Image (tube, rainbow, N blue to C red; front, side, top):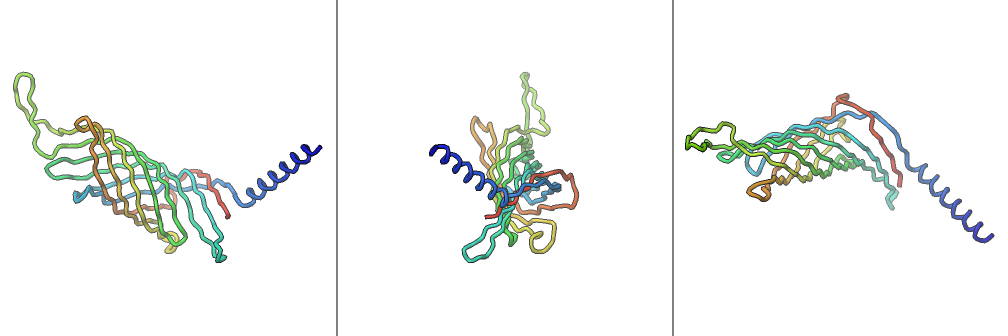
Length: 218
């Protein structure tokens, strides 16, 4: 009998906690648009460009009550990204790389943005100088579009400001640092830093689709 009462008490407490959490957390489905990315992409001092898309996957809005009774509000966004990048290193190579990635972004109510994004993809370099090719018979010719193919992994993090939070403007200005790793390069990895300064534009209706949104009250 005591075991039954104890079991019923545990079940009652569990149901109460579950109901309480369900009242605080709500899950909905809403349509969200796809964002456009445009940036100046520099490898050290060497210029380049980057353009891409952000497909929203999940949006979590979190509201916290501070001890001072002030509310702290921020949003966690999760995106699948696709981008095409290029930089020009004089006398060495031009590098064009296509990547897909996963972006984790946090935006607080003041507009401050912090994000982290791992990516992977394909890189094609084109050598900057004249490249000569010698065949088995000793004939020499100039090889056009000479270069190398690489598998590429990128890890990046950045900060920015979301003007839609305070100025009702549909874009984010950001700075981001990326570390590129290309393989194989002389049987090892070729590491290359790259920095971005650009804008993320949030159009009103571009490739919109349904996204799960969740609100958490703490």
